[in-house]
Every structure is written in C-alpha cells, then in structure tokens.
Image (cartoon, rainbow, N blue to C red):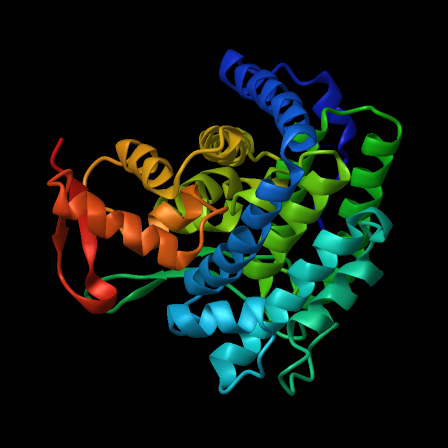
Length: 348
C-alpha cells in the first residue's frame, strides 16, 4: 500500500498561482469576519439559502434529484422524504446541519467519518452505512458510444481502513503542529480521500461534506453563506478533470496534486467573492425595488427569480416578484417563458 506523509507539504515549493490564491483567500476571510460583525441578522438569511443549494447541488452531481420545491421543503421544513432520492437528500441535509452546528467538536478521525456516513444513509436500509467498502470500486467514465473506461482504481477493500486512519493521523499532525498551510493540507486530504474511495456508496458527497468540515475547523466559513457544492456542480467537468490529472501516479506516490489544489482553492476564492457581492446588497438599507434593481445589474444574460433571491436574502419571495414585475413594466427587464421556466434579462 502507498505511504502517506504530509510533512513533505511543508518543504514543497508552490508556484505563484497557488500562493496568490492562498493570500487572496486569507484577505477575503478577514473581510468576511468584519462584515459578519456589521450585519449578522441579514447575513443569517444567506445560511438557509446556502444549505438548500449545497444539499441540492451535491446530490445532483451524483444524479440524486427532486423538485426545487421539495428540496426547499426537505431542507427548510424538515419534511419527511417520499422516495429513495429524497431519503438520500434528507441524509445529506442532516450531516450538513450537524457540521454547521458542531464542526468544532467533530474530530477528523476514521470513527467520526464513519459516523457521518451512517447519518448520510440514516433514512435508507443500507447495511454498509458506517462501514468501509467490502468490494473493489472503480472510477470510470461512460462515453457516448456506450463503452465504459476505468479511469482510476482506488485502494482495495482490505487496505482501506488503515489508509483512512493514516490520512486522518497525518492531517491532524501537520495541522496540530502547524507544519503545513491548512489551505494546502485540506485539498491534499480530500484528494487522498477520493483516491482511497473508502465506501461502497457516497464517496463524492462525503468528500464535499468533509471539505466544508475541514474548512470550518480551520476558520474558513464561506461555505456557510455561499454553497461550495453549487459552484462545483456548475462546473463539474473542471472538478473531474482536476481530480483525474491529480490521480495519475497516486499509487506509486508520484502524483501531482497541484491541479486539484488549484481547482479547490479557486472554488473557495470564487465563493468568497460571491459573498462580498451579496454583502454589498444588504449593507445599505434600501427599498425592495432598488435592491432588486441593483441585483439585476450584476447579472449578464438570462437569470431567474432564484438567482435574485440568492443576491437579496433579506427580501421575501413576494417582494422580489413584485420588484421584478415593476422592472419588466418599466422596460428595464424582459421576461421570457412561464412557470418554472421563467427567466429575465436586462434591456438597459
């Protein structure tokens, strides 16, 4: 089995792009801390929107879907799931809520990761919930002509428990001893986790939940207000490409994790930038019409009512709908489609 030693992270020379991303994230994290002290009530509304988006997007990446209305009901109202997809979504919601509430007392150990996996499957009768895999799994791609190609073979089941213990021990050691920059150690841990692929099912969703947990534990709270999962889902081809590049040579300890580190840091920084944009709209108290007008000026091309709701978390849905109607009536916006296919674009 390959070895795991995170000490080398400390001695590695990182290129200017990675160093620039890290510096920018620290700068944005400092600004976010200041913003939160100024307007905590308004920003709390971003939390609920991010929870809905994160739950929806992380499951959608794996093909687990339900309607927008049901997603909101499952996350916001904790309604009972109606089918298998909703049972999986409800499990994700529960793990995410637990991380939000108790990240500081959830250690990074195999035992705790197995417990989170058990909660992920708590609405399903899954005998492998909270257990590492018992069959070999493969990361594969299905092509348009129907043929399937194996892209990467993760560790064998018998190697998995020890490997999971090792990455947790190494991560805790370098973070605890301040031997490595957390924003480097976190992507390396997540990359190793995905290469081990420790479960029969749920590896991708667990990796995204663990990303949020590790970031929170290191003081980076952007995922609480802006969904990292939604950003990954929007460009999931980039996610899979970066992961695929970084996996080459992993078994022989000759992998280059840089593509995945850059991808994840870029996603985190983009989320911080989104947070700043949304804060700008709640920073100054203004009428609903003016707030929605300002939000629409940030949108290029077609956008939906939900896009504006994310930018204006302090407004009710009815206030946003009313403002959009007025902007259409005044020829500032054009409306297209109907029902859930309704979208808008700017005319001015």
